[in-house]
Image 1 (cartoon, one colour):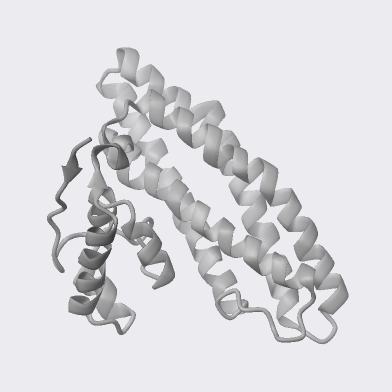
Image 2 (cartoon, rainbow, N blue to C red; image 1 turned 120 degrees about the vertical axis):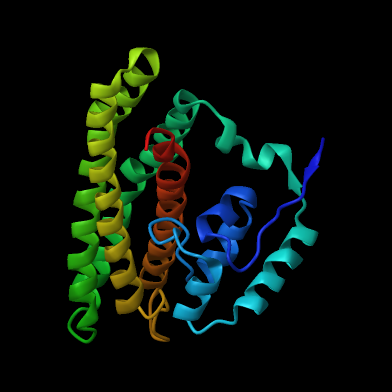
Length: 234
């Protein structure tokens, strides 16, 4: 079992830090640093935008490296075949969305109907979540029916014409990822960073917890596609 030594600094792209050191994703999520859709920027710039000290962030990351040494298998998806990576995305992330989005939707509706009268922001939460749910389910269905098969077909016998078409499709998928990320940012804002009010009932609190989990899973999902899978064909 070998240990890898990451090499990054404040000028390293945020997404590249996560590719070298996957544990950084947890730190970035906790500090609201976008490593998927907005990950194509230096750590220094990402920190400045949030009013964070880049040196302190870098120090925190290297402290994490000391606490969680990077094993070779931690970055397995960087070297995995496209077929294996797609299988992982479908079995873990697409399955999660198909199973969890309807359940989260039930909670969102229940909280909105029970508390919307004295909490007007819940109407916006209800609207945003249902927009996100519809877009994500449509997006994943299209990936499985069209885009992922196109990637695997190109792997088998691709030519320049099919590569050009594939690049166009991947560009569209990235735009859809950006749109989902924007809705997630709005959800976080309207819920006060997924912080329920003191009077919130158990369902209310559970709803916010599941929404924050959805955000984290979506960030991981988009990271695997935008930062590992798609660049192989761009």
